[in-house]
Image 1 (tube, rainbow, N blue to C red):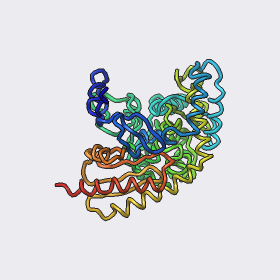
Image 2: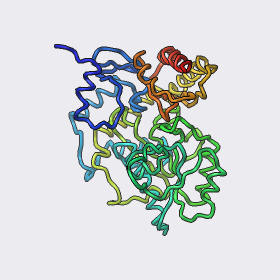
Image 3: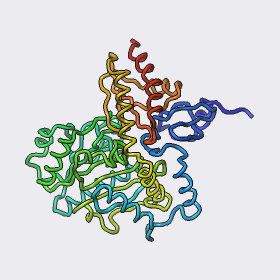
Image 4: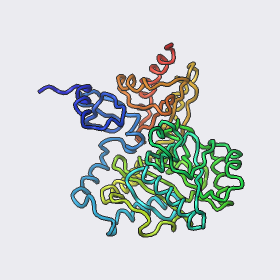
Length: 404
């Protein structure tokens, strides 16, 4: 029997799958730790982690048995009934965030959609007929009509007609611009931001800016909503990226790394925002099911047992330092930025070709905002594996930048 090649494996699957992704001709088959293997046996170092999803890497020896056990009990039941691990995961998340209530769904898009609904109903309940939410340039919140409207990328908007109204867009880290855009308005109900703009090119919000926005929201009675879908769950070295600023939001959205590979989304709320949604206002058929809740509970347990927040800070700082040493003086490298294990290398020209070149060199990564190489490896990454990333990636970037 002939083993299918990477290219014909992809071609065989393509006729029946909507072409919504520009896929590389690779079909991955198994993984262990920070490494994966394709159907032809080629090994790759995984610096993408399913786009910041596989918090614990692949085939984790503590996670897999727990999920196997759960599969023998219950996978899914309706939210008509109490789900013990849903209540347990809600408690774990609210304890670590300083918030009070949680709603569970399956994706980051769903979580952000729920946050937008909370903000709009919060405004309507106060008598604001046409509530508006402040969002940001470079932002990405999802691809539903509402979250797409909150997103800044014109490519995401193209072809879908009129967007949902009710969003005010401002420049990040510019408090004067925020004040000017909202001055004299009585229809603003919330400010929604990513502490680190992942899809928009790894742009972090400054701590002092987030503190200023928190104070403004307090003064105006607006909700402060953080989209931590990509930056949360330890990705920056704290449970949630905004915690570096020492503040607490009114609403926070999570997904990606929360289930270490199992689809889990969550909305956490605090204060008045926690009481906005009541029975019948919102729901999710698969949200909070027993399998996904077990994944979330076990992910937090393992992260704490294995001290992964500390590892993320240590190895993330080391990786960024090594990247700066290897590439910092290279002409065409605009910036190397990030915190913990969410790192972006911005180049002076579009660099999408590096995806295939890196894969050929046995390294999985991606490019965001056309010019930023994004590294979001599992939080179990070691220093030795960080060195491997640099050794494989730096020569590719240098050679690419030397091309005409």
